[in-house]
Length: 117
Image 1 (cartoon, rainbow, N blue to C red):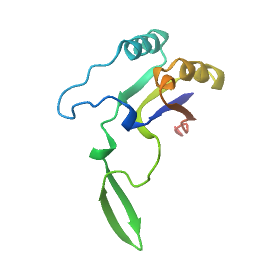
Image 2: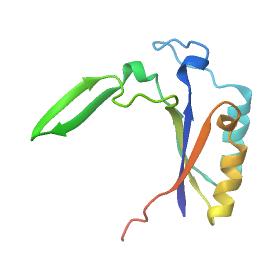
Image 3: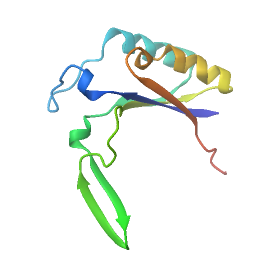
């Protein structure tokens, strides 16, 4: 079964990062990525650029609105994600507990709908 780990954190509490240059992952994420891959649990994952670069699209009264930045004001923002393969919820929770994002934010774990073949 596939699960998505959504990493939420307070962007204001994070050190500033350039939006034009490639980022360097810290050691804890490098080790976590390697462990996921070694276990065969890695499907996908990446860091997201800051919400200041986001564009929000929504439909209101039959008209499409395109807004700069995030629409919702929250204390935490979506900063990255992983899609993993896990045998069950307990296995997925094990990976979520090991995610470095839990040290400074919240990791939301959600099952992905299975595709109907």
